[in-house]
Image (cartoon, rainbow, N blue to C red):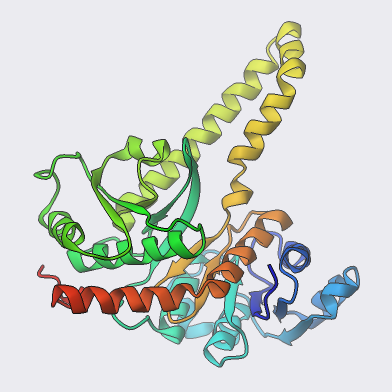
Length: 349
């Protein structure tokens, strides 16, 4: 798919920056012809790396920045000290209209704080949410919030559902996605007041989504719904638990195949199937935490990813822009307010 979008890249954010940022941008350039890039960071290092990719260099502009946001820097410190950092300058580039979206593998808290401050939120959205896709038994689902909002009211959960469904329609191509609220049980009487109030609103809405109801933790990996909605506390724990479990079983499997000569022989016989499994659950395929709800497109790449993973994060940004994700969210929020007669940001607490 071709595009004419310009993506601002925080070239100094991440464990292996700027090398994987430049290599990832080159891979994304091939996948998304027409995309242009603005790299923020050290001109000397970036121009040296760009010599390896002359075609990328032809569609890339390097912008010098003075500082780098450290991985352990608190968001408040980043806001005070980071105005000339590669991260903040890349975000400000979107605000100024020089770029359409921003991608960074740097400090998540700092990136969210800066994006909220500089870009603000979309009309009708009170809090942005971090969303990500992940594999399930039935395909792929999107889950939000993954840590941006610890304490959420009913209005926040409703808005997360609207944004998650818009993402599923625009980026994943699901015409009418199913949406579920992560809860301690599937019965309508379960959960705290806020989640039950959010369910009441979603149950009665005519938005282009199917409200499934409450779901539990096992429903996430089973793919019971296309969109999993949770507060940031529960969502982050669920995601990290799933990642840790996958890593544990990978370690168990590796140790088992190394146990004896016969185990090693079994590995070689099963190698094609194991490669297919690895590709199916490869975290690089799902790399990219989307900051849904900000007035712009901002994507957080995992700090330890490689070029392939970073290219996928850029791909999410391009897809959101190409499919008009933010415009869909604005329309859906306006529709919700008009039909329900209650502003999405004013659901009774």
